[in-house]
Image (cartoon, rainbow, N blue to C red):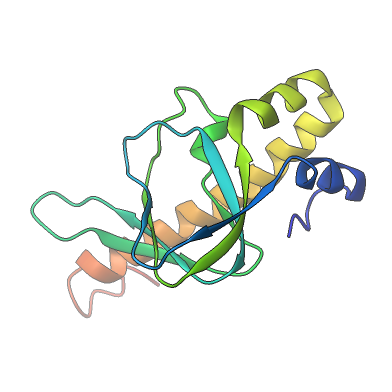
Length: 146
């Protein structure tokens, strides 16, 4: 689930988790809201979406088993940059952001490892958002998303 973390760091992180169930259709968080927690999906799917003025939210990516839901908790001002909705019943590990940030601040190696893990996820999400938005809004036949 936290494959890119050092084994001991992954175990330490997972030791802070609590198991939660999120019913299908639940808004997990709203873009612009306070980012005070994050999740790793055990089962089910979560859609990440972006508010587009005058349009329905654009689904950027759908997340499933083992994937991190939420990264904004790690970076000030701790505001969600996307929205998220449970598409199915989601069983997940939930983490308190302040607790994990405190662990990161108290152990430089652990903090660097968590930063690197979340950075990899963030880079992937930015690429996925760019690709999806080009697919949705580029003129057809322009080849811009390739």
